[in-house]
Image 1 (cartoon, helix red, strand yellow):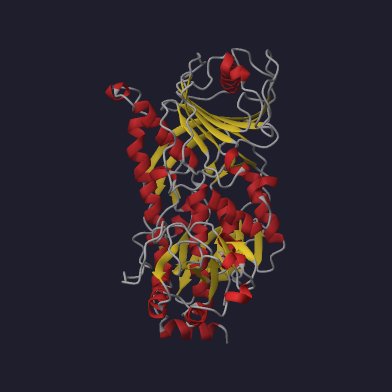
Image 2: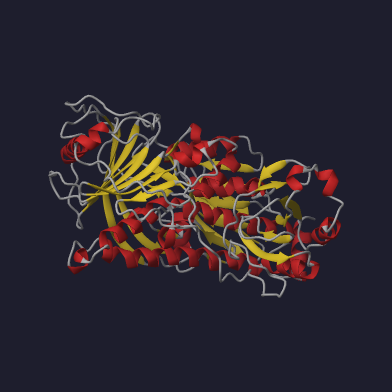
Length: 618
């Protein structure tokens, strides 16, 4: 069968190519550019725990080599610390909750649906990056981003230290975000593709036209390497101005310039080393248009990305204005003295909210920024693009190997578009509250804390603004049966990354078994972790469950876990290849397990699909 054609060689397109190759599906990536990315420190991405794990699984490289995990999160309003979260506590003790406190002693809000914080922040250059400036004044104080135990004395002397009642620990469990430059992410993906025999990258190939037939799709390109390519399917990962979307005449409605930010990447030391900061209504005077919000996010090697929220309008952000803003902000955080700094890159990031009407047109699909744009209130777009790739890859792989399952392919749009639409609705509802500029709402007791909680959720990937999506109304959801049993993970939600015993007897994390195109069946069996697999693999219900797994309509792997949140002993979990829970059954129920697996695969394969697959291999 012909390969899958992927248009666009950004993070989403490259991730999709690797995900398909891991499932033995060949693909061609049409790269309009020269095959390498411009190094811009003002263009960074923040990944949640699940999407960071996806990239690491596909590239085989730890992202800590290219990025930086935040030591903590701090939010402030004027001179008051509203909330602190210590991610380092989770690193040092995996059994202790993250420290989260607010300035009113409320402990931490329980955001159990959360995942880590994360997504994409792209700074479109408004003027040349790479300028250098040196601040003068106070010597550097505190530690570096690599030394999160540095002193915060200068923060306290500036009157911006935590209040005495902001010391209550809470039970929030938010994994540390991973922050890295976008060119570092795409570089890691490109390096992995070099060693992948099933992926061909065609550089200098700009899409010109698409032709579809019932048996495949043809893409014509122009440029130095202009030619035509034959494929089984085509996926447009070619960004906001997607040629694929335009050629398929798919509307892209939404809102333009929802928010604008001036962006600067600089090397310096701040009083809260390694911690990301959201500072609302900073108390110092600023040059030019007032900035009601500034965000500081640490990168590796003492580099920080700073974002200033700009007022509505199209005011020009000049280099002089941005340098003045940098100096004023650093001085405000350092008791009035600007510490030494090196300005590395600058830009302006404009947030748009748009959602494509359709994500599928026959054999053509849209993913990433070609399908949706979001990013207001600290939420990130790249995470959703990576989840698009993860969702689509296993469905295309199954169709490529076993013939088209129309219901399964249609479910990509049904699932992913619904999740992104919900995220956009939540942001649109919150924007008037958070960006109204005062009014009666500003006098309501507790409104500042509520606003802070919303923004924290957006930045850290929690709650309606940022939590990983749940495919609750998916057409792949099986019908309810009496054998279903409740667990802490809702059907359609991402599963918890527990330790499991694999079929070869090794102990691995559940997330490591994802992305291979197989269903996962997980038996919850307390006590199995302390005995060798040979002692229990043929005992009790294991032989019957193993027979039921073998009889499933698609290849599946049987795993055993000692425990799972909310699951009783002998609970059986069915998990999709992208890590979302299908169902939880009480005990071994072969008929119900088979029916659930068949439904999540889009229903029984049709005779036409089987005939088409056989014909394509002859």
